[in-house]
Amino acid sequence: MSEQFRRLKKRTIAAYGVGDLGFNLFYTTLSLFLLIYYTNVLNIAPVTAGFMAAGPVLWDAITDPIMGLIASRTKTRFGAYRPYILFGAPLCGLSFVAMFAAPVLFPSAVIVSSVIAHLIFRTLYTVVNVPYTAMTVVLTDKSKERGYLAASRMIGAMTAGLLAAILMFPMAEALGGGDIRLGFVWVASLYAIIATIAMLVVGLSTQETNVGAESSSQLSFGQTLRFLKGNSVFWILAAAIFLGSIGSTIGINSLNYYVADYVGAPGQQRLVLLPLLLGFGISIPIWTWVATKTSKARTWVIAGVPSVLVSIVMFGLAPKSLEPLAALILVKGLFSDATPVLLWSMAPDTVEFGEWKSGVRDEAIGFGLIQLALKSASSLAAFALGAFLAVIQYQAPEVRAGALSDDTLEGLRFAAFILPTVFTVAGLIAISQYRLDHTLHARLSRVLAWRRRAT
Image (cartoon, rainbow, N blue to C red; front, top):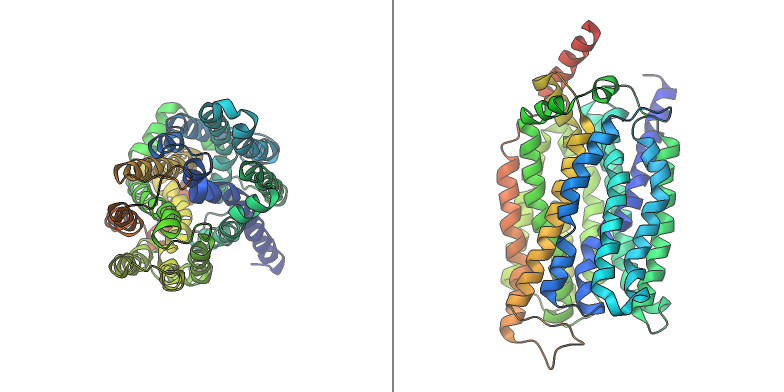
């Protein structure tokens, strides 16, 4: 490999990772704060807020697979996927601002305007993000290099997570001039500018290869179904992603309420979320390296078991001050956040497995369904948590009279540590059935290369 080619690879990996900084300014902000924004800023009842966060998944169930089908069949001089990033990024940014502007512009229709804006954002996010994730397949066909691409993405994601966790509520309070709803609009505008620039970096700095491009652009719908039907490792991975993401989303959102009400430190959630993200950042190169020495699925389990144990310890200790809670969260972050690094390096490998099994290749439909699994998990988790908050009779500070009952506080502790653990364990059981390792993938790649040469 020439030195020039190595430098090109490094630039591609770095540029691709910058893109996830943009996407995760949106995704992480909503994952961390959308539910508590609905309940504690817009003062919407928890069950209704849960529906508002979860409802758009029905729309995603349509748009994510359709976008996958459209993207893989696109042929332009820019490639199959880059045009959607280049031209869709600014619109996606504007729609993110609209999510927070809607309640300000339509104060008499807060719920309806928020839901409509949410649906528009999710549609445009799908248009840009499904092609972005599918690009992993056409940037390289080597399993270990995909691990480096995934690690680069996670560095961008961690940076976005830090910005979201640290700045969202403090900046909203500072910029709102006493009106926190208006403050959220200003913060969303800033995030949208940063995210749009980050996405454009990907579109302008990467180059798609032609691996599988011809076959996917000419596929019939029946061939796509055949590609998916026989792709057992894809469905195992999708199940593990879905279950694990439900657990992580419930856990992160529950921490917002746990810190505000159980610990008694409202507005200080960032002091707990920050250690979680720091643990994530520290562990990215470690888990990337471990995954190159053993299988990615085995690494997922190796990291997941200690994460579960830490959650059980936190439930037992039930820390009521920020310092011990933050220390335990830091330890948990070192282990639990191996999953995002691994899933985005495993998803492209399932494309070659599906091609080997079916004789056809359709990478974007797979990534569309992975995005659907992630967003479905996030939405279902938000709905489940909203319903659980209603069951334990949680009320927002501006609505309730007096302090929360002991039963409600114990419910928050259960939601923060036990509910996520149940789904995390289920995800670990699912991923333990995944059998596609580096050796098998290399063999499949050689077979596929021989087939392409033969045809």
